[in-house]
Length: 293
Image 1 (cartoon, rainbow, N blue to C red):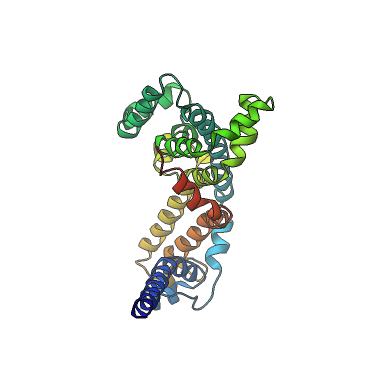
Image 2 (tube, rainbow, N blue to C red; image 1 turned 45 degrees about the horizontal axis):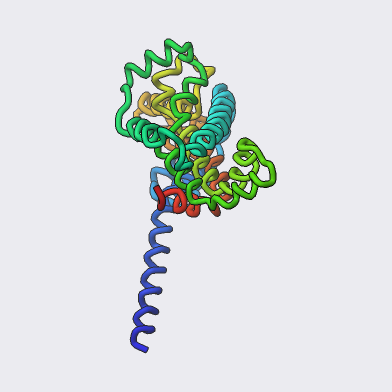
């Protein structure tokens, strides 16, 4: 009886800690959203707000008509869609043969892949490589360097190794070829790990920033992160020019803080909408892809 009582208190404490942790993680999102829908004066009075004060959509009106927003959105969608799709196919084509223990040279290939996780050529050699390939200032420069990850490949390989071999044997008995088995049988069974790796890649491509600074020159090829930097810097310069006094800029001017938070909401909303659809596969894909190797 005492043990049951102790477990009751443990469950209560555990649930309380989880609720507190969720609140801590949720607060930044609520704060950003609240500030984006508030006036600058309300932000100065309530910087830690979790619901809007003096509701205003002026920041959204200004950012929505920005001439670069929708072009940057299109570029980021293209980068993310192509990068995730091509990367998933590449992982499947590479991990499937590496998951076969009878593959000759399997240890050598795995050692070479792990080596790339520990060492790389560095920034300057990578820049010269991209330039020599003719990819400089193109969207491909933001896709190709991040197309392959040793960590993701190992997760995929370990997941495929955990699949029962009897499934493939049954398919071969029915006359199925290796490509058919891979793309019709293995791919169907690998939805958890595919969804997990796709989420990793999507977040990485959507938030690409450093590579864009290094490889992109023209405004037409900007991804969303460079657009976000431009918006923040532009609004900040106006704020500096006014000495932080919004009245000096006129009633129609949106100050940097509200404009920044509105842009953040616009930029991160698509990823937040995608996550619930892959959440059911996320934990399963990570666990099954990491416990065996």
